[in-house]
Structure formats: C-alpha cells, structure tokens
Image 1 (spheres, rainbow, N blue to C red):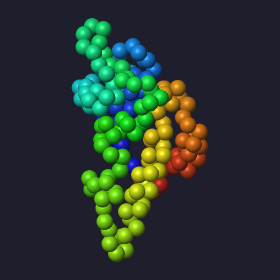
Image 2 (cartoon, helix red, strand yellow; image 1 turned 30 degrees about the horizontal axis):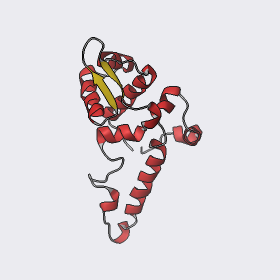
Image 3 (cartoon, rainbow, N blue to C red; image 1 turned 180 degrees about the vertical axis):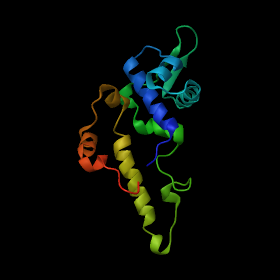
Image 4 (cartoon, rainbow, N blue to C red; image 1 turned 90 degrees about the vertical axis):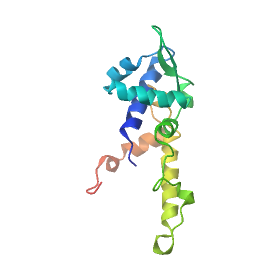
Length: 154
C-alpha cells in the first residue's frame, strides 16, 4: 500500500487537531507543527472540511477543529476523504474486476488485501493516535520485528 503525501499530511494535521480538542487551530499552526507546506495543507484542509471530518471558522478566533469526536473518525475515513477508496486496481474496485485463465484468483487476492487494510485502518481512530495508544491487534502487528524490515524489492 502506498499513501500519498496528501494523505500523510491530512493524517498528521488531523492528529494535531485531535490533541487541540475544541480549540480552533489555524492552518499556519498546523503546518508549522507538522512541517507541512502551508499552501498544500490549505487544499487538504478544504477536502477534509467538504468530507465532514473537520469544521472551520474564519476570522481572528477562527481555525479548524474536528467535526466529530476523535473516537468516531478512523484513519480510513481520512484516507477515503483525500484519495478515495482504500484499494483500487487501475482505478476500479476489486469486486468489479474479472480475470480469466491463470490470473483468475487475483481478484480474491485484491479483495483480501482490501479487507486486511480495512481491519487496521477502520479500527484505528484519531483518539488512538492522539493518545499514542493503538488497539492491541495493531500494536501486536507493529511489534513483529519482520514488520520493520524492508524486503529487498519493496
């Protein structure tokens, strides 16, 4: 799985909003806290606002804040808001693909991969990130030393 810079920045900005609570945070503050290019972040924040993940207010007391409680916003919600569906093959959903011959089982592999991504990204919420305490199943996966190794052809 590859995450775009836009998704990475969106997740990092959302983590900052999580720890800020109900206090509005400006785009400049978010950009500075996470070392994100401010103009790039403005576009990302607009996408998150249009998706209903964050809210905003203009003016001297303005800024951005989460639109719902952090425990109700999953990482998958943010990824979908920025880049669309979690897994696509050539822009298609895996259930809409049809392979024949020796490649027939690839469709099941793509669907299993999407299910695996969902099992992690839908259970991890912004409150987990903000608290620095991930669900046990995710921590267990990350604790495996092989998870930290980079295969020769990655």
